[in-house]
Length: 220
Image 1 (cartoon, rainbow, N blue to C red):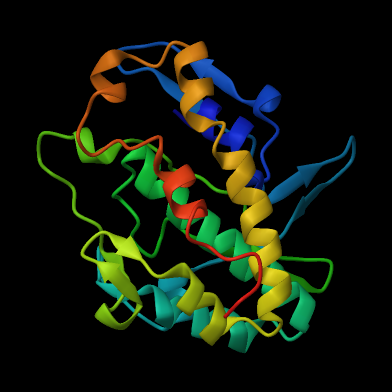
Image 2: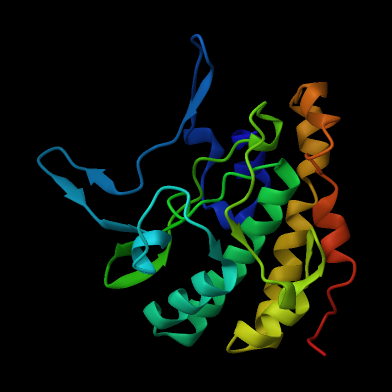
């Protein structure tokens, strides 16, 4: 699932060709570390801070609202254009998580990275269809009722209107990235995603297309 998502989702920032699949008792897909870079003579490390840390929260699996995360990002990222880009990336990841059944969205599974004097969302990581787990993993980061059209459908137009600096630019960027994410269903089938995932009631690879349809080309 990670390979499919990284190929289709522009917000993930991974080049899927750098991933390594290791087969064992449990197959796992390994991502190159994004918190350090190596040269022949040195190792350079950069700071990474989880959303729990950014919001001064403790506890494993503590419940958060997405609005709290976005408020913390706005407080931390001073440049308006840079913040709007990260806002869009965050919303795309929310759509991708719902599409792939990745319900394990606690505050340690989203981070900011500090590099070259800038703060931004780190590349996406720990993506898996956890909704298929027998224990029934539930999301711990959710939208409040104000920003939901229904129980499982966020109102992204209202979210952008309330949280973006330049709502028109974010809507345009969001629509463009959603259009790319619409490739997810076709790529999953081409790459042989098991039918157990394709047919699972909590894996909804057509979701990006449904999210895209009602998003206006300009905010109302």
